Length: 280
Image: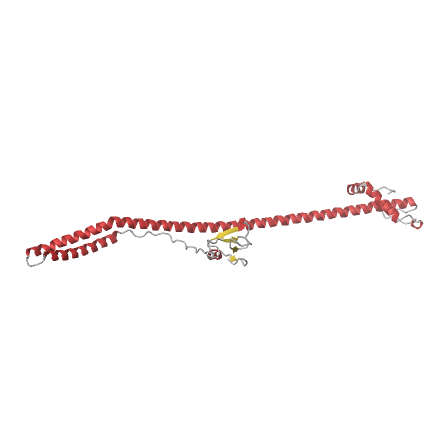
């Protein structure tokens, strides 16, 4: 290879990574640092395999060195760029994986929150249905009392009157007996018998209490001491850490990670632990 020449592939590769002025600067630098010496004549140019017979051949050797230096530098830069790309790709994958894990955790938290709200709504409906059933039963009893109690009194009165009439007929014929006393005694006995008979009939026909779904246990509402707030307390749980706090705690979670409880017992029932700062 003659002085200043290089293969087309090497020149193309060099032109891709280094401008011509960079090659000239590298060549001048080598020429300053390694000037020609007479004892170099007869040495072999490792790039061409030819003998260095003159200063011109030596300059050609230095140009080959400049080419090789720039190519090595360009390849190192390219390799560093590839490493940086691989690191960036790995970080992007890690970030995507972390985002997916966070999404799955949030979905699980939302699922638990929905399940809790469903259970709470079910308990509220059960209590409401129980109250409606009790109100209906009370109304039925009131209607029953309004309809049947007067009839009971009339039946008892009729029994007493009939018994009094029957018992006093012989007394009126006997001039020595007191008809008024006999009438009162017979009426009282007949009235008591009639009242008992009517009550037995009423009990036999009275409506029975309808079966209602067993109400969910009422949650115990806790309140802070009256001297502190005087208002009902609401506990706020963290869906991620499963820790619950007072509503005025400085370590409350973000809105999307919150779940509310009506009492401390309710929070502990769902597996939440109290905050160590606010001590709910």
